[in-house]
Length: 183
Image 1 (cartoon, rainbow, N blue to C red):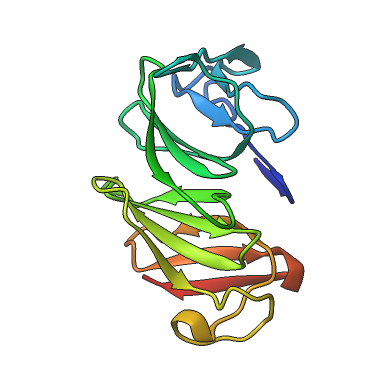
Image 2: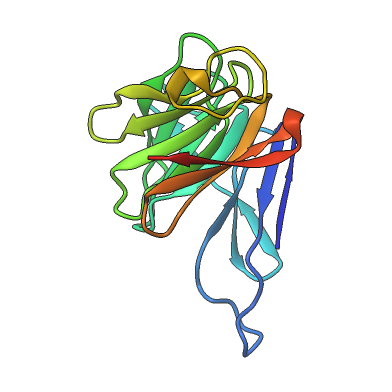
């Protein structure tokens, strides 16, 4: 079960074949409320307490991805944050124009990919260094296929990575298309 709409992404995991929880926490980003939620038992929702360097953190989330090791990455309007399993938050990267929206993480956890709804671009973030690189998108809305800045998107907001990490698939909202970007 997956629901995505402009400005809001929700994800939920259903019970396993035996009807029991599969013991995996599932993060949900909700653009209308500040907390990040984690469901630990099917149907049970609790708010995760996030602690930044200056104390409790209250922010507007635009996307979330799990690193499959118990930590999370959270996209805010202008920052990409790493949230440890203990709830400690650190900044991985910042964005001077546009913002971080939909997120996907590579299977090995070394790269994050994000769809920028405002600047119509697809970016790669190196987790270790925080370096941000634009993979595709001219920065203006459009529908052109092409390489790098010859490609155009119109409000991309959802992104998923292929199992072999060779491509990302982008929900190009304004164009009502699914686009493939080679990585």
